[in-house]
Image (tube, rainbow, N blue to C red; front, side, top):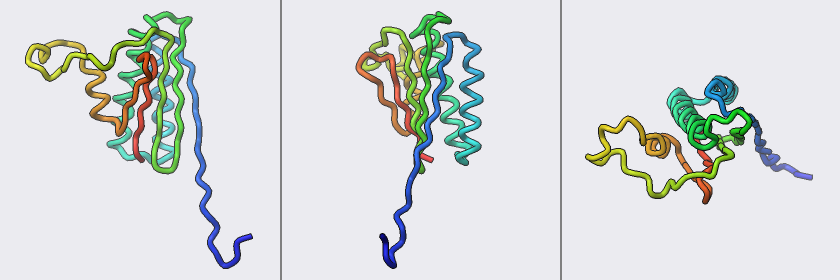
Length: 144
């Protein structure tokens, strides 16, 4: 029993999960969750914008490139919310990709390409971006 001492604050973690079919319409369900979390946890406008951009990009890539738009394959979105950060983990059922050897989208020979900027943008906007070894799962951390 604590005598004349403040009780230690108990920090809680909230968890959310989405299992999305690999169709582009699934993005709507993702956006609804992002908005609900941003409202509930009073996420700043800048962080909200960064989360929305990064998660749209990553989940879209998982649906299109990872699961090849196969509606029988799922994209799993897990969210862990702690007092000072939100961690999103996105996993697809595809074989993954080589995220280490991506072309530099800022290089002169790539500057006019219409694609190939997603991972670059996500790494710039998220506070932390970590891929698993296969490249079919990414963890994005945002400080709140």
